[in-house]
Amino acid sequence: MEKVQISEFKALCLRLLEQVNQTGEPLMITKKGEPLAVVYPAPKQRTRVPFGIAQGTAKIKANIVEPACDPSEWEALQ
Image 1 (cartoon, rainbow, N blue to C red):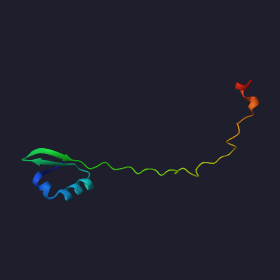
Image 2 (cartoon, rainbow, N blue to C red):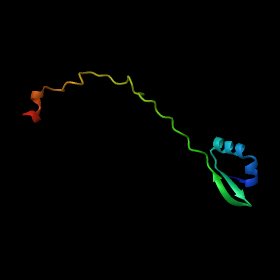
Image 3 (cartoon, rainbow, N blue to C red):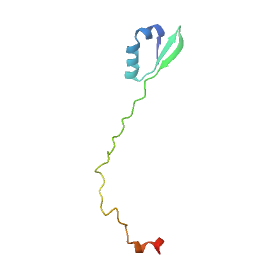
Image 4 (cartoon, one colour):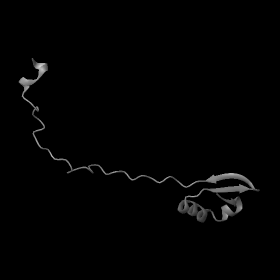
């Protein structure tokens, strides 16, 4: 973990934050040699899968509205 004095961090803040983002390595900010804060890179955001991504991948092979067998064959109706 790289360490940087608070005065240097103040002067180079944007460059140092971009470095943390690019490398993924945290940065420790110190004041008089004592740790003051640690800057970690933000977690990568997952891209949302668009709605309907599976559209067109399934095929209907039979009538999906009618029962699979004749109602007279149902045990519950007897």
